Length: 228
Image 1: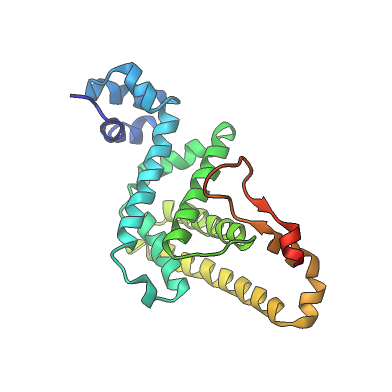
Image 2: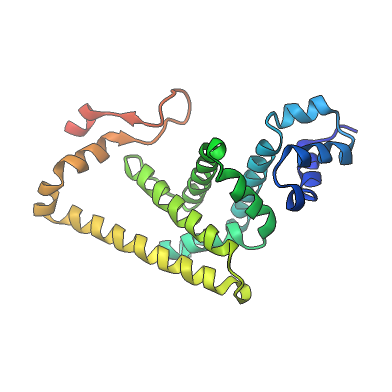
């Protein structure tokens, strides 16, 4: 029987609470499953680090499955965002997530952690039907990354019944975001404010989200199109 990457990850989860997302947990998973060491390294070239990232992606997939069971179209946007973040955290093993947070707090792994959280925010916005094409594509994901990561850190230390304090904290963060969005809308509606913020608005309008395929840059710039 060929040992799959999921089988190795499941085996590692038994050791992560004690060993963290480490080489020790990676090797223990190999021993537990009887996997070929070369195959295991092909699945997870960086050992525990790549296992932690695979676990994070699994959490994103489970979140999307949970969201698919809800009628998102009937909900307000703030309710959708709250539901998505709760769906991402509820039911997760806090000790395993905590070990991941410790790993990604290390300077050498911080970039991987930031990318993982960005991908979570991107998955949420895509699931919620975001169709932005300009700089808003970036700002939405950057803001949601901040909301998600701050809620995650609060949740890790929250012992309130049903994590009620975490969800209250999440609601407050979303309130702050909504006030920011309202301020942006006021700028767009006001001729005076649009004049004052003409340059940043032009810059935001000229930035485009990453192309679906091809290219090496994180977005596209079309100043000529903006000037039309």
